[in-house]
Image 1: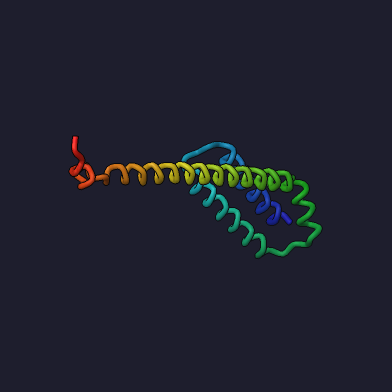
Image 2: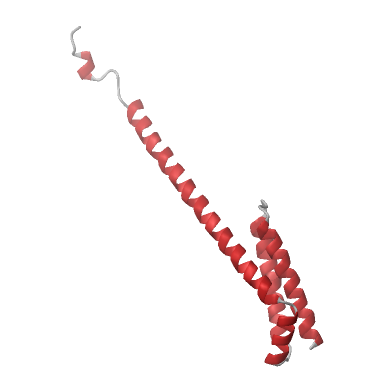
Length: 123
């Protein structure tokens, strides 16, 4: 039971770290999040390697209040995902505007002022 508690405490610490990183707008957020998620996964694999009962797990899980941290993590991840989707949508709109402006500019530039229609006009 002590080994289970130790691993779940580490799991909670990594989850709290992850939550704190997601609350900030850090430039290097993706690599930090990836590293912490990988560490959490390694802890889960260690937990799977030990023997414990469901009651023991539930008792330690409740004692450490892991459910609250997991719910907060889920909310932060959803919020970050929505934010990234909105940013991508905005960038796509800007690219579309720039592409249409470029297209119009190319058409304007490609008009040859020495076109025969202009040369045959009498003034």
